[in-house]
Each structure stands twice: as C-alpha cells, then as structure tokens.
Image 1 (tube, rainbow, N blue to C red):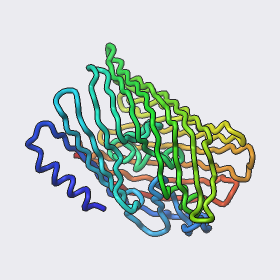
Image 2 (cartoon, one colour):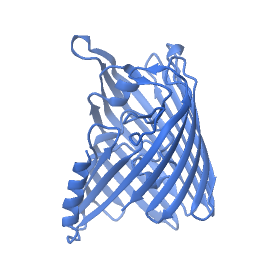
Image 3 (cartoon, rainbow, N blue to C red):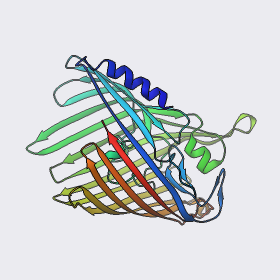
Image 4 (spheres, rainbow, N blue to C red):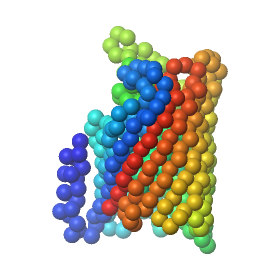
Length: 363
C-alpha cells in the first residue's frame, strides 16, 4: 500500500526541476483505542468499539491500534501553460486494503475566475470533503463521524468552478454533475449489511456557494441524485434500491476571530420516494487559542427518521474534547477523547468511549 505512495513521491521528486510540476503531500499517524463501551457484536466486529472512519471502516476496539486514523497521501499537479493542468492524488489508509485515487482530473482556466474541470474528484457535499484526508487541515483528529460517514465520497464527471474577490469578500461557487459506482462498498457491507453491497449514485447534480472574510466563512450546498443498491452475491443477490431519489442540503458556518474558533455544520438527506427516509445531522464546536494550543469541545448528532419502519432508525451523538498543539508550521499533535452514545432502534455498535493521539504533517 505505502509502496505506491513512495513510488509516486520518488517520481515527482525526480521531476522537481520542472517548474510546471507542483508536488504536495500529507500524513497522519494515529494511535487510539476504545477504552469502554457496550459488549455486543455488529456483524464481524466484537464491541466495545468506536467507528472513527466510516468510509474506510476504521474501527477502534479495546486494544491500541494504528489502523483507523493513520494515512498518507501525495498530490501532484502538472501545468500545461497558463490555461491547462492535470491533478492527481493517491491516498493510502491503514484501514483500507489498497490505495485510492481520490483525485484525477483536468482543469481548463476559461478566465481569471472561471475554471472547467473534468475527471474524478471528491464529492463536495460537506465542508471538509475536499480535505477530509488531510488531518492537519482541521482541529480534530478526524471530522465528526456522525456527519462524515457516507458511503459515496467521490464522483466521476465535470464541474464549473468560480472564484472572485469583492473588496475582501471571497466568493466561491461550484456546480457539478456525474456519477459513481462502488462495487463491494466497505462501509455498507461491513457495518450495515454484513454482506456484499454494490452502490451506484447516478444523475448527480449539485452546487454550492461559499462566502469568506478574514474572520469566517459561510457555505450552502444542494445536491440531487438517484441511488441503485444491490445486496448479496450470486443467486442471493437482491435489489435494495432501484433509482431511489435522494436530495441533500447543507449549511456550514465557521468563525476565526482573534483567538475564538467556532465550527458548525448542518446537513439533511431526504429520500422522498415512499417510504420516506430523512437524515438530519449536525455538529457544533467551539474553542479558544492559547498561542500554539487549541482546546475545543464539539457535539455532533445523527438522526434518521424512516417513516415505514421506526425500528430501523439509526440515532447517535458524540461529545468530543480535543487538544491541538501546532508543533511547527507544518506539523500538529492532537489528543482527542470521544464519548459516543448509541440511541439506535436496532442493535448497532452500542455506547463507547475512545481516546486517540495523532501526529499530522503536510509538505
């Protein structure tokens, strides 16, 4: 897994003399464990357990582990003159079986503020979607799992990106379209079904607008798509969803004023087709900087309202206490204590408490 990253880094380093190539990268070394929790089973997992990384099924149990939060990535952008470029990013997660191509797209600068892009990109549903893997970019060990736990995280298609600064107000707008098929989706298969799951999000159409100043940002996002889902293998393979419509709405508000730090995000998934299924998720966090230190307290919540079968509703919330120390400009050390309360109507993973220490680095 890491051999692929080393190879990419070596090739890019050899080409550093070429001014057209820009190389960057990131790494997180995370160590943690579930220190207490409910004694129960969830398919292949014996709990007490704490799900730190839903998409890659990074789960802490009652022994120390480096796998759930440790990862590394390399991104390279090659420019063909002033108008065209190609960007690729390869990421290796210790909890995943193989490296993943998060980004592989071409860009065409139509003007100073407008860019057309096509290829594979992260799906920009959430405020931290674009840099979810880059631990240095946010105050926690990882973004709150109650929100950042969706099965599709990328798409293949095209987008139109607009950036403009109006007297100190930075405006970013993006519209995108495409689809994504994930065969043998790990999160759905291992956490929710206990069987192979093939998932397709098709007819994806979305957009967001973000406004930024020197003291904070606000972001609004909308997306619609259709979902196909197949569960099982061979003769036992069944259709779970066939073109089910899905709508997503999201609001993000962040404040960085002097030493005050506030992070919030509110999202709503709606599947309006009968039976109606609604997901409401949010987090609110606040902290105060003391020089290079940032203590922070965050509350996040996930609530499902499945009209047809209330016994299938998933509900949980988490309190996270985090302490970040910026060791230097490119490195941060974090300590996080999570208290997870499972209020699901079915046997999920149960209550748990977890502690994690991480070292984040960017280059």
